[in-house]
Image (cartoon, rainbow, N blue to C red; front, side, top):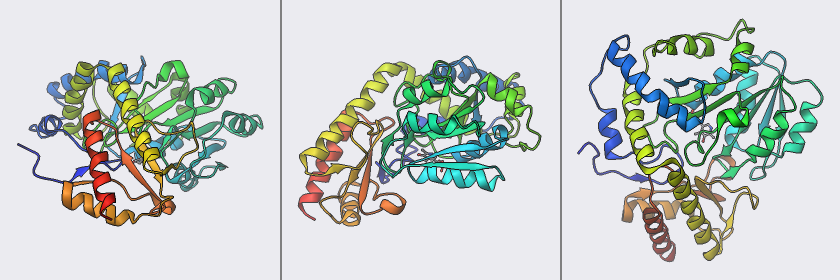
Length: 361
Ligand SMILES: *Cc1c(COP(=O)(O)O)cnc(C)c1O
C-alpha cells in the first residue's frame, strides 16, 4: 500500500490518484540520458499521440500547465494575442501574456457564459492578431466552450495561431488535435488524467513550429523547437520528472484497457448524473445551459447553503472533499469533480453523501 488513509479529492484538480498510478510514480530513478529513459519515453509516444489524435510528437513538460501556457505565448506571439476570457484561468492568461511583454487584447464574457465563434470572428477580422488563446473547459466556472464551432472560424484565419488549453477536458472527451487544426494543445497531469501534479502534456502543429522559428526571444525552458529536436531521439531538453513518465505509462495502459470511447462515455454519464442531482435538489447550474462542462459540475448556490460547512461535514464523515468555489464565485458556487478514474457508482455514492450532509446542515 502506497496510499495512506487520506482525504479523497472530488475537487477539480488535483484529483484522486489510484494506487496503481502511485506505484508506477514511485519507481526508482533512471538516468535521463540513459537508453532506459529513451525506451520509456519512446514507449509512451504512440499512446500519447492516440490521446491527442495526432501524428505530431507529444511532449511531457516538467512544469504545471501554466508553464506551457506561458511558453505558447513566448513561442508564438509577435503581433498581438486575442485572449478569450470567461473565468479565472482564461482571465489570468491575458495577464500572463502582458507579463511576457506581448500585446494582448481581451475578448471578455461574463463568468459562466461561453466564448462564441461569432465574437472571435469579428475580432480576428480586424487583422490585428497572430494568436488566440482559448480555454476549452473553464474549470473555475464549469463552462465548456464550443470548440468545434470555434475551430471552424479559426480555419478562416490561417495566420492566427490557435492555442487551446484542454487542461480539464483532456481525456474526458475526444479532442482531435489534427482534425480541429489546433496549433498548441496542452493539459496538466493532475486533472482528468488523474496523475500526480507537476507535469503537463502538449503537442504543437507544423504551423506553430514555423512561427516559433521566426521568434528570437522565445526563451529556453519552454522552447518548442528544443522539445521537438530532443524528442527526435526520445530525449527531453532538461532533466524531466521521470516519475511522471512512469505514471503516464501506467495510465495509458488503463485508458487503453478501458477503451477511449468508453472513458468518454463514463465521463458523460458522471456529468449527467451530477446535473440531474443538481436539478433534483433545487440548485441551478452555474454555466449557461448547453455549455456545461463534462468533467466537473459548477453549482450555483442559489439556495444559499453554508458551503464551507458542507465541505467540512463531508471531510469528517466521509473523508472526502468537493470544492467551495473558485476566485470571485467562492461560496456563491461550489464544484463537484467527476473526472479521472471515478466510476458512476463512486459519483452516485458521493452525491448520496452530499445529500446526507445537506440534510444535517
Ligand atoms: C488547473 C488549470 C490550469 C492551471 O494548471 P496549473 O497546474 O496550476 O498550472 C489552467 N487551466 C485550466 C483550465 C485549469 O483547470
